[in-house]
Length: 327
Image (cartoon, rainbow, N blue to C red; front, side, top):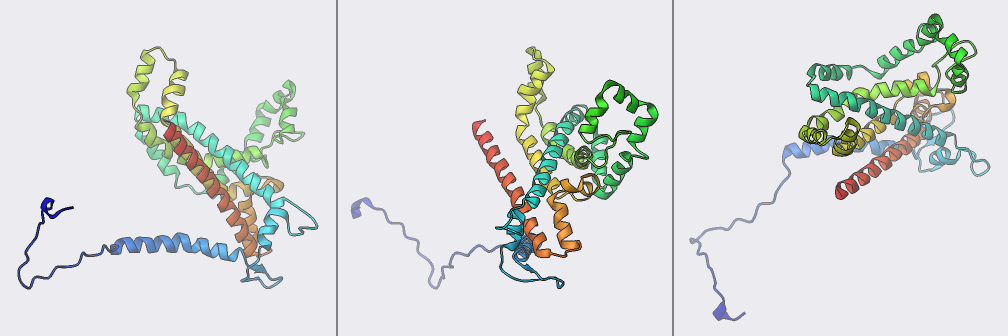
């Protein structure tokens, strides 16, 4: 540009004045401390387990640090590969996913109507009760269901004493229960079975489902519901076209969080699942603390289970983003 078209602006400073350099932004001490805690509590254990998963078992002498893929090979194709291929631990992973998916979906499906009615009627005491139930440990909950489903002191004894067992035999349903593994030749039984395992796991996370669904349902615009009813929509139409679309993302998020939580369930699976249908979480404990004391193999299974949870969480995140983009 020519000098005629330019306007120069000059700032005259007093003699001896020093222009300070722009100060660089520094991370506050509290922020640095928070990151240090996150790294120490989350990243460090993860890296430690990952490193141990490449270790090597020493017969009769624990294990040693190494860099081998034998533990992962054993998880996916068995220890005798390539001579023999076995999928024992992949089967355990399958049952981990099987129990977690069904129990998380059932927990959310049963908690949804309860939470919706609780938000409509402002039953704060029920919310307090649900929060208090979160203090119950998994061991305490499983012990209660163990007594309830016991053959000698639980529901099977009630079925026998009240004549329900004879009625089931008379109408032909008893044979169906036997095919499902819920009866023996004399009476109904719930231990051990997939039914008891899924039922206990569902009850275990049901309070969490209520807590996760309460905020989005309490913020639901009830004027839209009333408008749909005014226009002649029935209860099921209102539920499918107004309520569920408004909270579909929280529903999916709740299922994913409960699913990840249930992948690590140990006590319920140990008590109620058949030995051939136990999960990878039980196998991890048996490898680390059982008779074999094979910490590297247990760490490899833990990493596979963690990677599986990460894949499902990533998939849920992608689906949620697409749903938001299409809304």
